[in-house]
Length: 189
Ligand code: G4P
Figure 1 (spheres, rainbow, N blue to C red):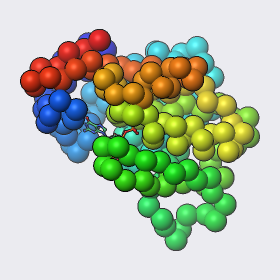
Figure 2 (figure 1 turned 90 degrees about the vertical axis):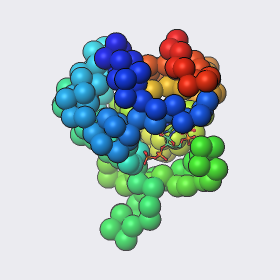
Figure 3 (figure 1 turned 135 degrees about the vertical axis):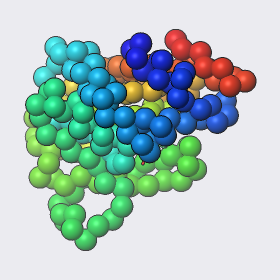
Figure 4 (figure 1 turned 60 degrees about the vertical axis):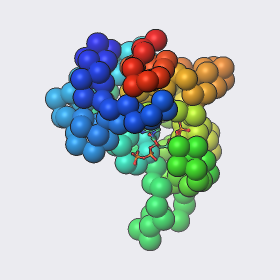
């Protein structure tokens, strides 16, 4: 997606050869008009698949899922990372290990919000090692729902997530794939 690549080049900051900071429009401050274009693009890319619900994970995934959901006209469900007394007792849960953060956490979704046989589109901001997507996929499977696609805004192609998920036959589409960020220079696929 041309607009996204321009945004990454103009506003992104390469922290080191593995981490890209996009706080200005995606991870801290939100550029609403830009997010709207992201939502529209996901609808265009996934126009031929059936989507009953969009699933993401807090926190950065929420804005993206919201922007896309307007075009799919479906509800958004976000997995919660923190334990909460208000969360239903009947939940689907999966353990996710974050290599970026060096720790494991749990993602939880109430059984009320994913139903047997539904077609689920997973959306998220970054794909690194793919563990968050695999955790959400497990939740979709626990609900006996169908994973119809996975949409990512920025895939870091030099980490293993993309290959792992594509090898599993997952319908994965990324709006931008970064192949390297050596010496501060971003190379797109
Ligand atoms: P994985 O799911 O693909 O295995 O990724 P990993 O656990 O390594 O990533 C953990 C968190 O770091 C995720 O955010 C992910 O979006 C984010 N992340 C990974 N690589 C980058 C990067 O290069 N730049 C930025 N800005 N973020 C990156 P999270 O823990 O879900 O936090 P949140 O921001 O959604 O709350």
